[in-house]
Length: 176
Image 1: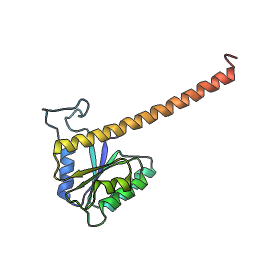
Image 2: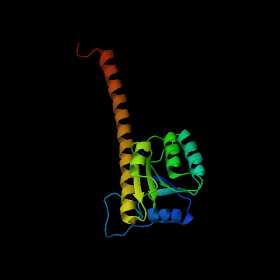
Image 3: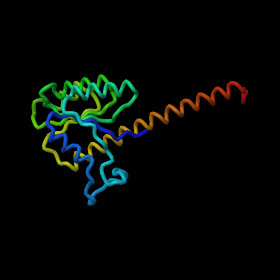
């Protein structure tokens, strides 16, 4: 049930390579959160990276139509084709449950404005950021998203089981 693939969109190819490196490289052994690493010592996350936000929206739209969802999208705020806010709004139309992390080095939009437009599940990170803190944030968000999906699955299975048991009780008239 868990999905550890994140989406990243940034027009700077060096930044995309940096993101892919920090999420796929083994982390320093001095500090670890139990269960946060995969067996190879990396973060346990994989990245689908896009330099053009239109490609991200097209591909993710197709995946959502096929029933596949990802927990999180990291979006650069300033891109020549489309602003990060516009990308965030469009990706939210495709999947209202996706978490969004907006990264920017500029103060051209306030976190309050982002929260007002995107509501819940949006996070704002100013560049430059501390890599370990950023990775920890992303891992925590993905872990929480996966836990929520697992909880929803358990609730659905429990409701189905309760419904079946109620039918058995009603059909057999046990206790009347």
